[in-house]
Length: 182
Image 1 (cartoon, rainbow, N blue to C red):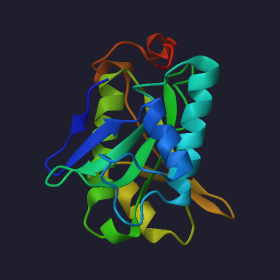
Image 2 (cartoon, one colour; image 1 turned 120 degrees about the horizontal axis):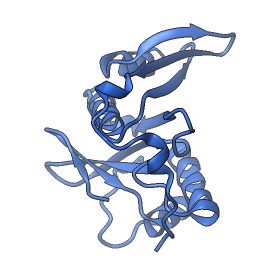
Image 3 (tube, rainbow, N blue to C red; image 1 turned 45 degrees about the vertical axis):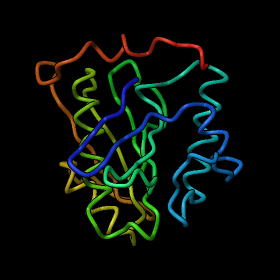
């Protein structure tokens, strides 16, 4: 899987080796991590990624991605899919940006690129949620084109969807093939 690029960012598909370093919170000598990366959420996502690799194979392109700044290669966060698409072509997403990189539009830019890739791969619906008091995360999803669809006592729910005619890739069910992790 190749990197996804935006004007300011590189979304790098997380490899099992990179996920293991995140879980251990130990960068390799050539890893360029922001001082406050990884967060607990990044570590949890990396653990989930490794679990998917162990049970069903490499989930890419529906796995996790590091968010890297293009100008200096610094890893400032992560985003990705919680699991491969279901039979209806639905996925759910999560993301986080290190505190030192917040407020600069990076999360919205990264999420917009991830949504475009999902649509291009035949995904018909993407779901996300944010805690009721996490206004910044709610704005990220709205900026990326997701719409508010409801809330409960804890979170607000967002989604975006496309008809099969609006997607340009292979049907989502075809994207569920398992590939062994390296």
